[in-house]
Length: 79
Image (cartoon, rainbow, N blue to C red; front, side):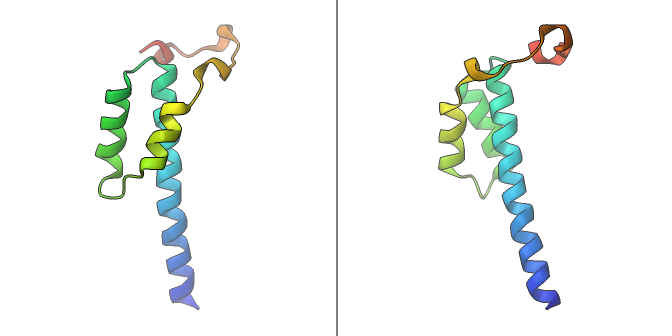
């Protein structure tokens, strides 16, 4: 049972890392990074398990749908 739980946690951890990579990639788009820079950063941190579908998700992410109150916009968002 312990071995099965360990494998399940490891799988969830890897999936979490990929979701984090997608989130950061989308954030970089909101920050107006170039697509090449976003993909380079994604691959650098996801290697050797980079996923083409994750990169496609980032590429197709529509930043115009991101809504926020400009009064609370963090300064690093313009970085």
